[in-house]
Image (tube, rainbow over all chains, first blue to last red; front, side, top):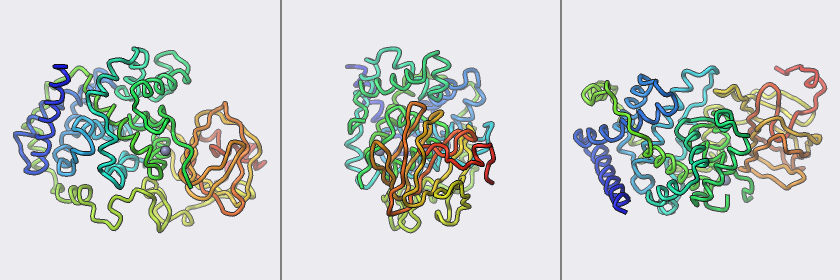
Length: 193
Length: 235
Ligand SMILES: [Zn+2]
């Protein structure tokens, strides 16, 4: 309980800092965000490429610049700061991988996600669909390890289902069904999907 | 017409995680433009990503300094005002309208690849009732293409090799299981067997993402141009 309260307080604080950067280009607030998020963004990059510290520094730098540039468009009723930073880091990682990939492609992260930034015609409805941070944390804590491991592969290590199946030596169908079970257990999907 | 076919949770979460091949992500992105339920689920799945990221052991940087970063920020070309206007206020005539643009019918996520509408693409005929237009290859070499099926056009019964995605952009078609309309999203794998038929009254346009060059056309399976079976690829 104490921990949940701390997380809620921390999130409140992060939102204040982010709004201060968005509204008044507050450098002290940005320094706080830097302190909090740089180690997490680096950890996210290192989860995919262990040991690649230069890649991790580049990604962290790029995401922090995006935070500075886009803070004015952050809408705290549509996403908490962790979600928002995650989507920036995810997009930056997609574009970095794409630049270094084996195949050239002209699809980029903006094509995939930009049209979703305004979440539909009704922001109130959008806000209602969000779960609380505590609910998601409690759900994650209760997942069987085998399900949590697959989520870790897909979200943090950035592995495709096929790669996850090879690395965990499990059939592809097992990977997919573990993900569906995890999401079901956490009550994450609406509409019976 | 109500959308009945959605990406399952394993697809939607891989999209939110950014770990799908980009061509497949594009197909999911196009579906989300038609489907508010999946958009809501996408928000939650992104939230899951945000919280998973917080479970990582923080890895502070030895090299990255705030001063150096601020120096980069201060010397970058002027851009924040434009950013805020484009994303925060969005003064365009359809500010929160996510559904595909009415003029061309092309989903926003595909507009870069289809800048001038479907008719201006380079279509190749692959059977009497079907034409195809390749849009691009993705980062894994998957082929992203459109298929255009004449009213009533049909495909022989077939199965699939790997994961193949299809999304209906215009018109409708049916198979043994049901009728599919604009916005419907189908993932097929080798366990699926079916016989799709485009609706008789209107042509049908679909987006497909397949493993090139083995497969030609996702939900519709291989089209049965005898030249294709001999390994001839139309240019
Ligand atoms: Zn849907």
